[in-house]
Structures are given as structure tokens and as C-alpha cells.
Amino acid sequence: MTRLNLVLLLAVLFSALYLVHTQYESRRLFVELEKTAALSRQLEADKERLQVDRRAQATPLRVEQISRERLQMRSATPAITQYVTYKAVPAEATRE
Image (tube, rainbow, N blue to C red; front, top):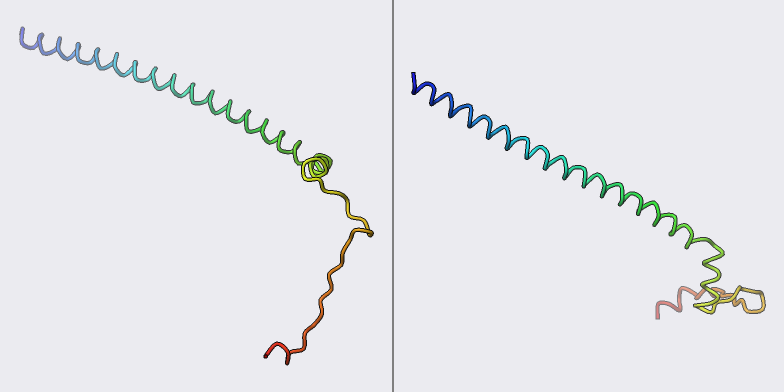
């Protein structure tokens, strides 16, 4: 009878230790899941903010302002427009 009691005591101790270990792992994984979810929310907010910034940077008025200031470009007028014309070359001249 004492052997059976000893075996049962060891089984109860083993199952108790296994239960503690399982609960510890469960809590650790839950905390890791919560951290990952918080990071995901932060990255999503950053993505939205960057998309708003990109749209603000690409407005036509801003592009025109940057092209005038940094690139020193100017609007095209008929006075400074140059037209390129295509002059067809005879087929016989290209064979030579």
C-alpha cells in the first residue's frame, strides 16, 4: 500500500509542477501577444501618419514651389518654347 501511495504522491507532484509550468508559459505567451498587438497598432498609426505626410508633400502647389525655389524652373511661355520638327530623310540616303 505504501508503494501505491508513493506512486500516487509522485504523480500528483508531477501534475502540479506541470500545471504551474503550463500556466507560466500561457501567461508569458499572452504578454508577448499583447506587446505584439500594441506594436502592430503603433505601426498602423505611423503608416497612416506617413501617408498623410506623403499626400501633403505631393500637392501640385508644393511641387510647383519646390521646382521654382530649388530647381529654379520657370513656367513655359511661347517666348521660350522651342519646337522640334522631324525632317524625314529619304530611304535611299539611309542605305549609304
